[in-house]
Amino acid sequence: MILQTGKIEKVKRTITTLITVVFFMSGTTVKSFAQTANTAAAYTLPDPLVMNNGGKVRTARQWNSRRRELIETFSREMYGVAPVRPRTMTFKVFDVNKNVLDGRATRKQVTVFFDGTVDGPQMDILIYLPNQVQFPVPVVLQLNFDGNHKTNSDTGIKLPVSWMEPKTIGVVNNRATEAGRGNASGGWDVDMILRHGYGFATIYRGDIDPDYADGFKNGVHALYPELQGRGDNFSTMGAWAWGLSRAMDYLETDKDVDAKQVALFGFSRLGKAALWAGATDQRFALVISNQSGAGGAKLFHRAKGENIKRLCTVFPHWFCSNLKKYIDEDSILPFDQHMVVSLIAPRPVYIGSAEGDRNSDPEGEFASALAADPVYRFLGTEGFPAKKMPGLSEPVVGRLAYHIRPGGHSVMPYDWEQYLQFIDKYFKGRNTNVIKVKR
Image: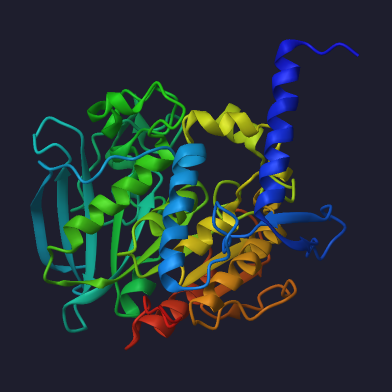
């Protein structure tokens, strides 16, 4: 048999990857936890508690070293290398109103100037703080899809000036208009968050980087051309996660916010960004992933739902160029998303799925939590108190939590009810970042 040069290289890479996978193996074969006939073949996952040199992680200090290895691997092979906090970045609080939402909240709006110039890349943070509780308050921080003005009908919210997706309600010539105000508020349950005594903070994803393949020339990427044209380039997903960290930089300066208790929430592609932000920035106290799917919470190794090929072809800007090396190699990756979840340990993580969201592979999202459990238990927490897929609307809650509900790809009131109970569990008088393992 004669192979073309390109095929030879692919075979070589496959063999190399297989060797790497064997090297990292925990020796545990994982089976599908599907409740339906949509089963996956048996697979073996790389062990997050095994160092690159094959040594077993046995102490907290070794885990810190392993964290650095994993972040380096994921930065190089998937999310791309991100810059540090810009030295010249500035904040401007341009709006404070202590009597909004019928007196229930204080509204703040803040512009983050990434390079310190008013005409450079920038993002606006919308913040609501509950008036019925004593400040400072914990905050739930999240990116939104279509602009801050769409998360609530409040007419005081500034309209975004960044590029907007066409064929979206209220968008004309790729710009936001008044017609879009408040019409996407269903997924962002501001009132429920405020009733629990938490602040709500959100940023339009397009302020950080527009969600289309623009050659990485717009948004924050314009400041870092040196991080493009390379395999580990600064990606859109990396930029969104980086932007969440820049929002945290501001929240740490706001005396009305308890910056030690900031929870990250993300839905769908924005859930992917939330997980990576939580993995790389330990200031975030808790992370919630709602149907984040491939590149988020679900395992690639199961080879179910959205795969690497689709991520790299339909959304080529989301991840760095190096991820393309693994197209059609999902089941033999030398890494997987349970390791990203493990990077958040010992901080709490909640993963939410929906029965009808087959693209996100609910069983794969559950399996990811299960595979991260050993790291959480190693670090002295209760970990994930489940061994099999739970029934519909039967949450499993430990330091890692999971639920699957009826319905499809969306954020429902049921989801927020579970997430806010989870935040209550860990934010009311508890420290979420304590490592109990011996050093």
